[in-house]
Amino acid sequence: MEAMHEMSLALSLLDTIKKSLEGKNVKKLREITIEVGSLAMVNTEQLSFCFSIVAKGEIFSDMKLDIQKKEAVFRCISCLREVSSEELLSNCSFCGSSMEFISGDELILKRIKAEVEDA
Image (tube, rainbow, N blue to C red; front, top):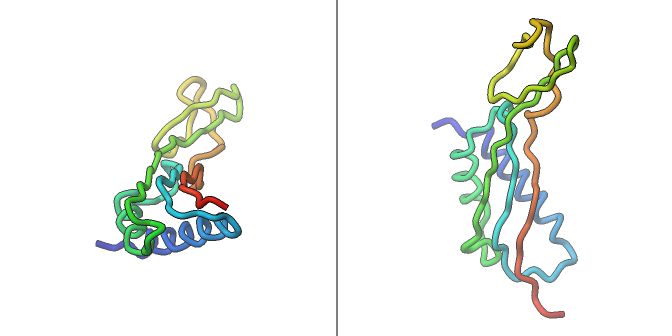
């Protein structure tokens, strides 16, 4: 199982989460929601496994990692129709012209649900 890419993504995600929690009185994380584009070249099962390895400590115990997959979006350069797909598209299925890539290769931290300590 080759998961070096996913391990570096998990570490980066953990760093982003920790930075977003700075200065907040977070007692426990309940759920982290991320969105992964279909062309991001990320194995979501490996990412989940790697995140469970790096996210240690009481704040992360019982936390759910919700990974939502998002299809890529392409736009035809001629007829301007937008099409969603899980795969790379090169030609428009309506007019045959070339497609331009719009979105779908990102990994986005969408939401953090947490318990906050009373101030």
